[in-house]
Structure formats: structure tokens, C-alpha cells
Image (cartoon, rainbow, N blue to C red; front, side, top):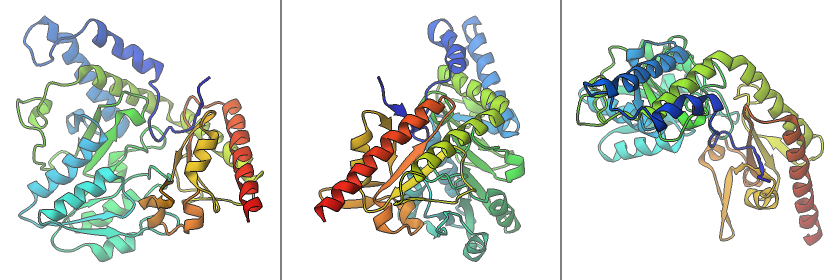
Length: 384
């Protein structure tokens, strides 16, 4: 039997409804939506339907949704496209030390070409403070890019407050919402953002497809050059098969958001309670309440995450907040930004639940983790 899957923030399985929606475009409807003959009709209609489905989840106009190859491309386009479009206004970008590498490495690349990047700190709870943003904004600031929810600890950022503050200075706002979509409400009107990135494979859709919300009127340099697909904004023949899957996934997320949220949170809290009630040297990373309903980042004091994962790997699939190499421990930039002490950070596991997670799986996973950690603690005490 396969291990119990508790790595839904890493990627998600395909929803059966998504697979069913995609099947005709894998088996029969192969046409290019830009063609002028009958074979283009079904793909073109499917493309328009998917755009409406994504827009429905985000509460925006379909014309404000552009499909991409994933969240990483969407982030790159939002940030680099803004830097190019607004280069005459300024070269200053504000982000946080807490972002995904698909934002941090883009900013680092732009810094080499003349942009100046300010990295906002986060508190020990992982939250960006609006007061820090206010102090960082300058006359030449062109973009603020802050993720909606963190992929490691699940902390939800006050994006609406950040966007409102940036708007008073005429500064564009982008948010990476790859982890939050389908778990909590994501409404671009309420958030007030200009750009928002999403990734299909975090949403029970395929890997290799995503989208970028571009508020009407926002100038953005084209990221892919070629023919006039995607309303002339992103060249390349559309990946209809996976776009259909993304659209269906967004429809499902909008339809069943509250049901899925309650289930994932119940499974997360059941797991947390079972582990915390059985072990003493364990702590929660991140904000105890302001976090994604499915995300549990637990630290086990003076243990190494790689060792725990190796011990449970045949029965539980999870991920680590620290990696051990040749006797040294490399703690993730997220835990470093939160100033998590190394004796806790190096033993951090990310356990994330999903729609398919069952109570029986949670109970078994907790049993396996508690047993493995208990044995490792006993072994360490014996060596001392």
C-alpha cells in the first residue's frame, strides 16, 4: 500500500471531475482554438468556458484572466512585466523575506539589472506588518509583491490591508495565491490587488497550467512573444487539455469551498491534537489561527526532520522544513525569517491535509509519527 499522503501543499491529486472534463480533449477534441475550421470550435468554446470558471472563482472579468504554464510563470510575468512596463517611474520593489522562491529569485534577478529590492521582515507568527510596508514605500516604488498564504507554515497575510496602503501611494500590488485558492476565499475585488498568480496543481488540476489575473487597465510587458493568443498578451498555442482541467477545478473550488475548508481543517486539527497530546517536545510554527485550514507545521525539538521522514516514509508522505547535508542542517528561509530557534527548526515537518484525507488516515499517521519521534527521542537520551 502507498503511504498516507499528507503533502497537499506540495501538489494535489487530480479531482475525478477534472479528469472527466479533460478526457474529450485528450481523446477526441485535438483542434487548435485559433484555427478557422470546425475542429477549432470545441477547443475555442472550452477555452472561453475555462476563462469564465477561473474568473468566477476570483470575482473578476474573464478578460482579466490570462492562462500561463503555472504559478512560477505567472509570478515571473507579474514582477518582471511590471518592472519593464514601469521602468520610467521607478526601480524599487517591495517584497518579504517569507516569499516562495518563484518570487524571491525573480526579485534577486532584477536586482542584478538595476532594481532595488526591499525585503520586509515577518514576526515570529509569520505575518507581515503594514507599518513595515508603510516605512518601506518610496516615491520610486513601483510594485509590492506579498504572497496571500505561505506554503510552509500556512500563515495568511493581510493582503487587503497591504493593497489599500499601497494604493494610497499609487503602487501596484501583486500576490501569489497558489496556496490559498480553494482553501479560503480569494476575491480580487475585496483584496484590491492588481495582479494575482495561481497554479493548477495546487488546486486538484494538472501540473503545467496556471493563470495570472491582470486588473483591467494595468500595463504589463508581454512575457511570451509570438502570435496573438490570450488576447495578444501571452503567445503560444493554448494548452487546452490542462486549461479545461484548471477551469473545472476552479468551478469545483467555488462550488464547494466551505465544505472543503471545514473538512481539511477538521483533519488538520485532529492530527495536531493526536500528536501534541502524545508528545511533549513539539511546537506549532506560524500563526495559531491566521493560517490555511489544511496546513500544520510542527517542530520536534533537537531532532532532524530528514530522520523523521526516513522513519515514517513507508507509511506517511510529508515534507520537511529543514534539510540535513553532511552533518549540517539547512533550515528553510521561511523558518529563518520567523526566527524559529534552530533546535526546533531543524526538526520541522510540514503536514498538509486535503479533500481526500480521511479520519482513519489521520489516526494512523499520528500513530506512526508519535512512535517514530518517541523512538528517536529515546535513542538520543540513551546516547547522552
